[in-house]
Image 1: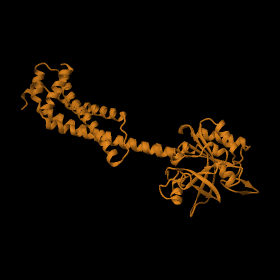
Image 2: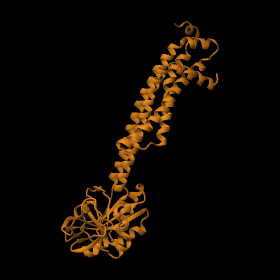
Image 3: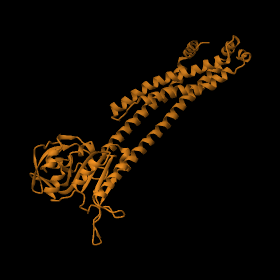
Image 4: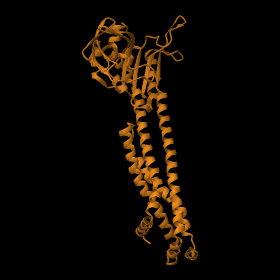
Length: 406
């Protein structure tokens, strides 16, 4: 018997009892739809987590001033003043794998605009900061390389500072604020970022060229920190080691002596990303297995009933020359057709459900082609796996006993 004829017989047999066929497919439809919807929800959640962690900077390396000792007295972290602008230039030019870099010098003081004032952090940084943090402006622009070179008195406000000095949602671009009685022109406002990985509120700060903070506010010749963004999260450790080795040479630190700087990475954030992705994957795999298992059991149950009801038909076919292989193939094809049709309908419903979650509940979803292929493949595999036993049972019937069956 040809495969085309087998499919025609299978479709005709399934069409005899439309209600039972529909109810049998319902388990597969629900299972596949659940897989598509949950995988899309998981992908969307994972993408959202990835974006948040990337925004925080999993590939960021922080180089900070370290301990300084004199006369047996140790000043602790940040006490050394040996970190220089030349160190940051050397890191950019000599360490491979560095994508972005900005030197930093921070302070904390009162910021004044007319009759309003606010105690906040003055973060001296460089033009690469928005690129490192993936941080766009809400109003205006970030300062330029020219501002850094000339120690320009320009300021970019965090959203919290803007709200306190000018009012929530206002555009203060072009206004002049005072920092330690020195006028600074506001050239932009950054979008809200929230809390950083280290705990500080990134929106509660004023961002200025590090040269301005260094020379005009603090009157220092050194810098406090260097923020480096590696080209990829995979080579953070190597880049960090190379930076440390370079600074030891530049600072003439002998082997065995304590470093006067600290190199730190956000490896915990990277491990969090891996853990979150793995947990989501295991959860979705469990849901997929349970859903498809239920649908497969339903198909097996109905196919066993179908074999019992069609025993005389099987006996008649075998007495007319049908082989056991033909009978097995017929019932196996019926099971596969049930699961595939249910799988196709389930994929469509899963797409619709995912779109509904995004549109009406604002949950991020992302339906990948891998999820569709996986769901379709599982539905076919489920039909073969759970349809084989009933088909094998039908093929093993004795023709004479089958013809006698009432």
